[in-house]
Image 1 (cartoon, rainbow, N blue to C red):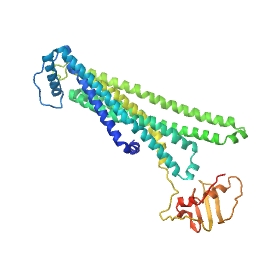
Image 2 (tube, rainbow, N blue to C red; image 1 turned 120 degrees about the vertical axis):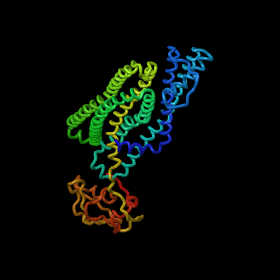
Image 3 (cartoon, helix red, strand yellow; image 1 turned 135 degrees about the horizontal axis):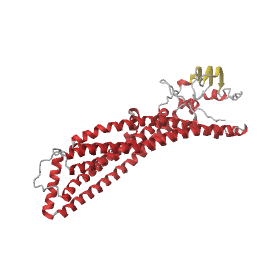
Image 4 (cartoon, rainbow, N blue to C red; image 1 turned 60 degrees about the horizontal axis):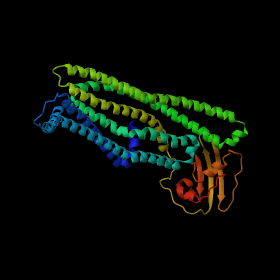
Length: 450
């Protein structure tokens, strides 16, 4: 997980401004939401006439008693001056204002999140495409083209759907939970500690399922790569398939792989669908346990938690459940997206073995000849070219004749360093090609593929 976020946040750096604005507006929305709930306390106090008038303020402290005392003081001034009905109207207006400010903050948080999400996905696409252009031809000989296409399209799209759509929740929901939990601590440390003892158990269950989801998603993305490879090979070799009446065999192969992919996809979706009901059940179970323990505290005469305060506590705690559910859903999505990001990262971290040497020289003309000296080459384990000695003088036309697969195209591909030879040397005007800058070498050639 650490390496994953390190990679994702490296793409977030150019969008720090948007990320900061998103966090600030989300924080503002959380604070306004908390104040709207806090306004319920004086509303209930006036409605049930359980709160006596407060005629003096106290020094500001980060405690429930100090905050409520000063709130009741200002509200008492309204009651004394204009009556209880006017006080109810003031409280109701305050709640509506807080809700308006909260939703405005949420909108602006999403407003600044849009360029961040789309920009990061654009940058990932640009990076993987650029990397594809830089990789040597040999990389695509060893890797199936369909799998590469799948990584560039399906896996990047999965990162957009799973990871980037969860970034907002990853920014907002932990802050929401933290601020509300702090306010709950202020109201009743004992009850909040009891709740926090129950939460790690639910987190452990969700995390366990999330890890299995990542493994299953990785299998699913790999299987999609195989499907794309079959499609690419079918389209490029359709003439041969029809010539040998191999349609049924190819169709059976595709359907077999497609059925396997469907089976894996069913497992992935079932685990994702489990996220919401499981987190809701665990949240409700924690809340019922809290209501039982809090109810006992209220019934005790010496308890600092009043019935009115307990109602406000329940209202604030209910606001923790939704972000906790969203965060668990985001965790599931990120786990699924991590599998795709691993596949994308495999391409981004692929080693480019054909690079300019440290002391590479520059050339701008071809003067004499190209010479092969005891050249040996193999793609993987099977030799393709063995002890090739050949001299091509400037101005001469050379034709290479041989069976299909005998190495004619490979021999030509070695000159511009599409591949590096295993042994021997290829000299360009007496200079080994590995000591010439690749861009200069290729600038002197015109290549027409068969």
